[in-house]
Structure formats: structure tokens, C-alpha cells
View 1 (spheres, rainbow, N blue to C red):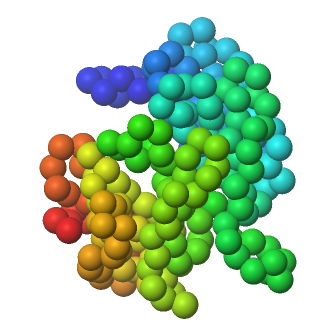
View 2: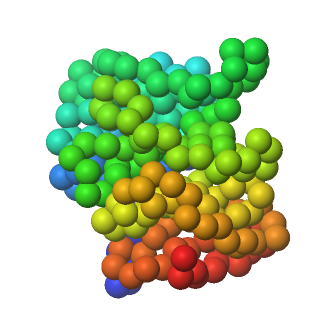
Length: 225
């Protein structure tokens, strides 16, 4: 869409076989990366309009989110099959698969919901699964830090935001609390109640100390954590 006029400037009619779950621009801004309920991540040409220039297939359930690595050579994806995958962006080969440390007795592992770069780091990424913790991983899939809600029940995270410099990581729990983690100290500093109904998403202002939340109560709220 063109912000000034509201006109639609590009449309990918059949970006996927099923509903689209996330959309992002690639690092150089020349392509669009999308994920879908059809179990794939795809890359589309922004200028050419070509659909499915690249396809990353290997998850066994919905693909919920994706992002490129800092040097644009890798793609990281998260899925409802309970795994995150790291791919070679050029060849679409799967290089590593990450699974959360959950008991093997669970028939359906908690889904991985999102992945995002950790600002201020050389090449680290924040993985959110429906667990009471978020993981910080390297491109190899190695987990370098785990931030926990401290709750056995109700503290499972549903979405995450990060401050512009990567100093703070904010997670929304199923208990409708905003968990505020100091990444340098690797600890939970405080929590805030942000809604009486389920929260769908959160994001951080690119310049200010402001976190935005939205959810099923149809409200958009702005917080100074």
C-alpha cells in the first residue's frame, strides 16, 4: 500500500495455498517474505511481482513467522509443529532444527510462534514458543540464554517485543501480564497487567520507551514499561 494515498501498489494473488500468517521485507527490501498455514515460507519479487521465487518446505504444520539473518544468508522459521528451522537462503536447504526443552511425553509440542533479531547483538535471535520462557539462539540453533516467566501454569508466552537497542525483551503471557526482562542481566524485572481478555500481539516503538499491545477486547493500548 502507498501510505500517502492508500492505493494498493502490489498484490500477490496466490502467495500461498492457504491463509498467510506473517509478511516481512527481506533485508535489501527487494523481496517479500511470507509464511502460511500451508506449511511453507515463500519469497516473492516486490518489483517483478513474481510469486514463490523461493520456497522453504519441511515443517509439518503451520509456519507462523520467519526472518532473515543479519547477513541475509539464512532464513529462520517458526512453526506449530513445535520446531524452529534454520535454512540456507540461497539453496533453501534446512541446516538446523530447534526444538524447545519440553517433556517427550507431550503428544503435541507447544508451537513456536515468532522469531526476531535481537538488536545490538552480532547475530542472535529471539524465539518465542507457547512455553513459560523465550530462547535466545545463535544461527547454529545453539541456545545461549533462556528467559523464564517463573510460573508453572499461566505464564506461557504468546507474543514478544524487543526494545530498539535490545536491552529489554517484553513478553505477553496467557495470564495477560506483560513480562519485562532485562537482557543484560538475564532476569525478569517486573510484570504489568495489560488486559482482561486475550492479548493477540505486541510491538515496541522504534524510538521511544513505549510498548503497544492489542487483543480480543478490540483495544490498542500504549504502555511505558
